[in-house]
Length: 321
Length: 79
Image 1 (tube, rainbow over the protein chains, first blue to last red):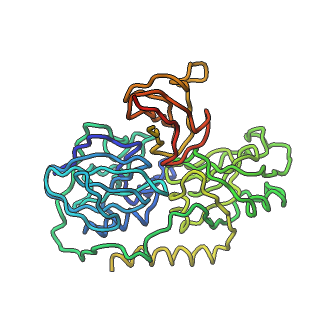
Image 2: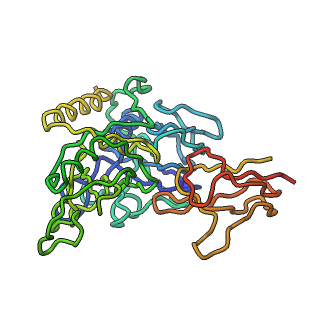
Image 3: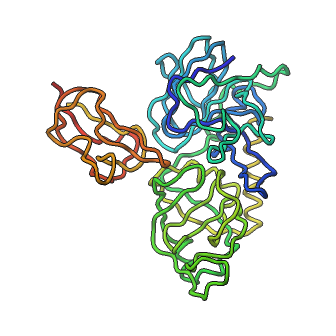
C-alpha cells in the first residue's frame, strides 16, 4: 500500500529514530526532531518504536491512501482533517481506501508526526530510514516530499502488539511560548568571560525564524568572549577555534551574537567554540519551539542531566508497556 | 473585507528580491490566487496569495516583519 502525495507541505520528510554510528565520518544521526512525539505516534499506530514516520514542519501534506490504513498524528497542535472532517490528534485513526488526509493551521509548536501501521517503507540507508536532505541521503529519495510522490507503506506487523487508543493528556508534551532548556557548560566555556557565561544563563533568549533541522538561532544580548591571540589554524574571531568535533546539541555563539543550538541534522565538527551543550533530555523541547519562543538556558550537572535522561526514557517507554 | 492570513511563521517580505518591485501595493486591484508577498522560514520562501478578488486595502505587517501562523498580513475589499 502507499500514500499518494497531492500537496507536499513545507518540508515533509521521512524520519525514524536516527542513523547512529556514522557521526565520526560526518553523517549526523538525524531522525525525528521531536523523538517523543514520533515515538508516541508509532505506539498509537501499533508499530515498533523503530518504524519510520512522516515529519511535517508548519505546513502539512495533503495525501490519499490506496488501502485501508491505521494512522495517528501527534506533535504540534494542528487541525487534522480526514475527507475534510476534523479528526483527533494523539489518537489512533482508521482510514478507508481513498480517504484524503489534510491539515489546517498550527496553533503552536513546529512539527507534527504521522505514523501509519506498517511504517513508511523506504529503503534502509546506513541502518536508518531517516531523510538527511542536506546530504541527499535516506528517506524518500534523499529529499523532502513533492507533489506526485507515492510513498510506500509497509505491511502491518503480524505479531499483535498492544494497541494504545490514545495518549493520556498528562503524557503529551507541552508546546509553550516560554521554555527552560537545561545545558551543561563546555567544552569551550573557558573561552567566555565570567560575564559572558552569566549572560548566556540569565538572559531571556528569543528563538528567531532562523531555525530548522540543522540548528536554531536565538536573539538576545551580546555574549563576551575573552580576547586572545588566535592560535594557528583558528579563524580570526575569538569565537573561532582550531576545528573540533561538535557534540549533538552544542551551543555556539559566532562573533558573540545570537547563540545557535545545533540540532539533529547539524555537522559533526568545525571551527566555532561550543560554550555549552543542551542535555539529551531537552533536545525535544528545543525541537518543539516555534519562532518567538522565549528560552532560558539553565545550567545543570552531569548527574542532573543523566537523571533527566532516565526520566525522559521512562516516559518514552511508558506508552510501550 | 477578506483577511489574508499567514499559515506559517517567519519573515514576511513584500518584494521578490531586494531590488525588485513589491508584489502588490495598497490600493492595487487583486485577483484571486494572486501573490501579495512571501514568508521565509527554514530558508524557504512560501508565496502568500489572496483567496478573493478585489482591492488590497491595507497591509497589517510591514516589509521584513515577523509573522506567526494565523496573523493577518493584509486585507482585501472584495468586488
